[in-house]
Length: 385
Image (cartoon, rainbow, N blue to C red; front, side, top):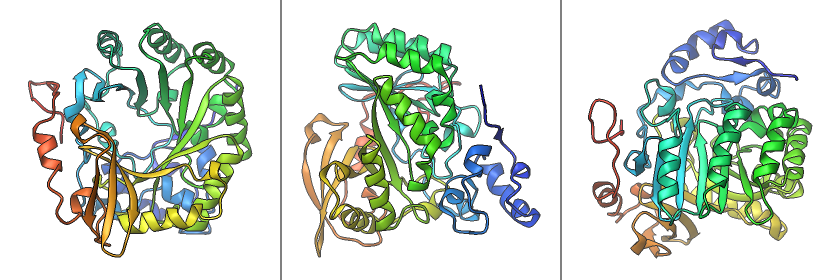
């Protein structure tokens, strides 16, 4: 079976000059670098602004003071080691601290800084919690990247979850179809496991992360086809990223090609204000305008995606922007009383995040009154940075 080579050192990146490697070394030391031959081969090294390069190669701007390591305050959602429960019917199992390719804009880069208390090697405590909590019908395997686990381990986790009667949907959040599609298309055991656990009445969903249409290569499309044939449902989600897809034509091409390939455009995320993410952020109003222009004229299947913020208080959809207002709605909310709530904020074209909008007073209340906390090693009551 063919395997691509992974690299953790900039010295292995032949497309970078020695001067570039020296300048970027402090960035890679602060925020982990990881890439593979497949992804590096997609880069046009003659173009310093190449979008694939922007996804995987460090940027000196990552060292600018900006944001927090846990901007969505996931630390308060833990109910068992490696298990988050923020919304009544949905649980997250953080089961891998390894990614196939380290996205420079990763909102969980804190997991790769070493000694993370959030990733649980043994998913048993989290699965036990899900088994006891009958309100949970939807489980997301995340990390890191669950497809970086061995097929044997992933199969065992899926088997346990599929044995829980009240779990109807299992989702896998993964970048591997874009970063290492051969891991999927050439691993018959993985495809057999997915086919076995993705049943006609209880499907497995794979949430892909294609950020740019150039990632939809022949190899990637083959991997997507194999997943379809295994009975898996495919959806895509991506942040809107400066220098990667902050262009209406690029976004239009992405949603069109995804829909042609049978991958539902699901969410476009507002890039979280995570520490190190300053070079990749796009103001909220600009993100909304880009997406609105991108889907204009596209067929309905290509325009299903919504622009959302994964905020500490919940998943907030940006519904519309007028001359003086930004209109939002809670798709999901930590506080059930906010579920579905529609609200308006004063328009601010410089705002990147919900907390930036004038008149917003909600975020800290939710953080202060979060229902769950998990003691971190050493007795701390929080896993926040």
